[in-house]
Length: 96
Image (cartoon, rainbow, N blue to C red; front, side, top):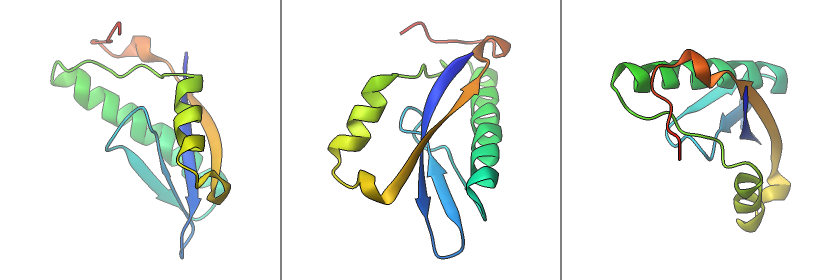
């Protein structure tokens, strides 16, 4: 299992979430619990698509992801959480 940082923000209708290590992958939901579950599903679908296209699967950058979010200076407006994804189920995994 790999652990990916996710950044959750409050919106006018609920919450949105993105993963700094996986650009272009995001989700929305009405509650924090819902948005975390949807992000885990979105990451899995994103990785499946990358594997089908023969593209490398991004690896989590660990603490560096957290540092980058905190360095942006707007971290007090977000919740930081993480999700675990089993990357071994995808055919193409980047070793970088």
